[in-house]
Image (cartoon, rainbow, N blue to C red; front, side):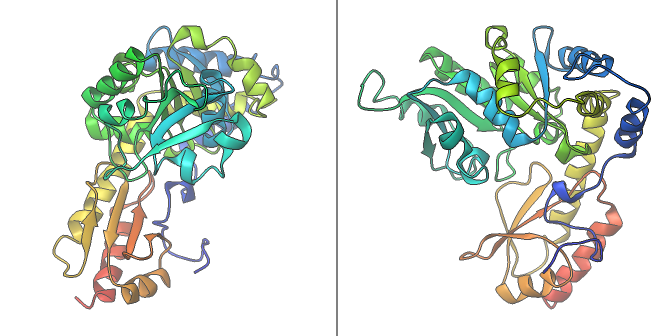
Length: 348
């Protein structure tokens, strides 16, 4: 099915959502008059201060254009020519960035199979057997996603345990936080509590999936790693000349907890969705619903029927698992309309 505005609300991705009105208004406000380029503007300076408020006084933020770029810039500062990155086999840097880590950074990804998209301390330890061997790539970074690609969230204690093992073995901890806001909203904690306070060294902070037009950030939490980021940002084509229009979006999300309001609403809509199919025979839920993603298994004919009306992705064809995602602008009526279509497709 083609995806477009002629169809009802999309459940394929939070990337399909529009821009939050407050963010759009902030972009318009920043569009008055001239301003210095490449980040030497008042909006970017304001963003830098808001990053410190959200992540801690030592945090340094760098606005970038997209999530994959944020990951590449952050990881580039953390790895060398013969290094490797330990990550889940479902990680975004493995499955959805077209081999950017291997192509652009020239590093090996040491993937770990997981049941829920999350690493545990033993997964790191199991990949350290070749440390010091010149014949093998050397583990240097552990990369996790918060939220994971399977919609699950690491608790602060789980992240702290990973950081302890990583740092204890001379490794750094990177976090792909494309949906970090959804995790913090689900966990009921601050952004700092699941990053800085538990030992994360660099995090990619996502805005686009949470109401921004096109705005992500590399947030460096270990000050010694910040020196090279401006050079890598430019070299990686992630330094926008008119940075103010990226920075103002991120500042708006970080103002008055708009990031949390948007993410909490998206999460609530996914909970409404999963609760709404709980009594539908023939549908099973895969993975705990801890964010704005629902993974459900249902018959192929039902999937086909639903995709004629609504946009969503099939996650695992062989098992009939689909992914339904909600966003900051998903309404209860959107969910209820989708639920009615699901029940009809399932002949309930």
